[in-house]
Each structure stands twice: as structure tokens, then as C-alpha cells.
Amino acid sequence: MTSATKLTVKKKSSMRSPLAASPQPLELPDGMWERISKKALELWQDRGYRDGHDLDDWLDAEAIVMEEIHEARE
Image (cartoon, rainbow, N blue to C red):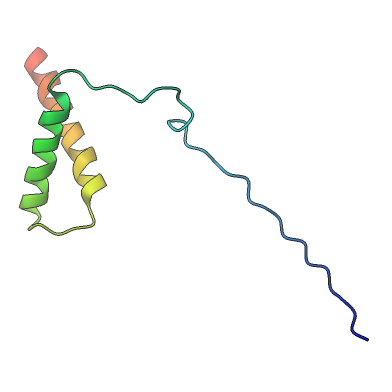
């Protein structure tokens, strides 16, 4: 007869992003999405069209566009 071994597996608690909990998606002001999109495309082109950095390009483009807006307001 074989003795059965009981294996207990702990379930990881799912960590949700604070943004995932928000009831509605963030909205960008008019024209902002287009500006960021164009800047992200430029960054991708400058990198030589290499894939795998789309989020980095988008976040960098957001920062650049926000800085341009900030500088224009001064």
C-alpha cells in the first residue's frame, strides 16, 4: 500500500494596479493623444524601428509632450 502525500499550495494574492481599480479610464485633453502618438512614432523611428519598446516610447513621448506644454505656458 502506498501512502498518499497531501500537497498544500498557497495561492498568491493577486495584486491589482491602482489604475486597474479606477472606475473610469483616464482621459487626455483634446489633441494630446495625437501628439503623444506622433512623438512615440518618432522615437520608434529614431531607434531604427526595433520592436519591444512600445511602452517605453509611449511613456517617453508623454514626458516630452508634457514638458513641451509646460515650457509653452511659461
